[in-house]
Length: 147
Image (cartoon, rainbow, N blue to C red):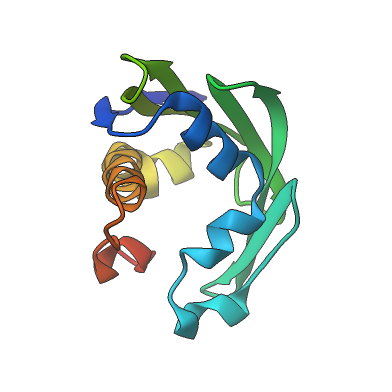
């Protein structure tokens, strides 16, 4: 059963090409991770994986649409198939509307366990990305995947 989530839209004070460029190379994600968590993460330009609570969870770039969208799909031992999309829509030359879309194929058990938390996760990621794009470090809770 597909769960489709369209997260909230935020305005980021950066041009869309700047946001796109930062996220189109997954090695850039590692730079934003606190030092004490970096050893759990590996990345190259197209893939990233992390050990989380005994699982190796990863994603890879599925499709890039320059300056407007990057789609990621599950890679490795993800507990369910998903498509995770970063959407950038220029507001003007220096500001961008940004949101995240998630499509996850959840069986009944997974839907009961995490279905309701996925929307919160998408909004939490959106807020963290907006903060990072503004030069702020996301709250430590942003990196706590157990919540």
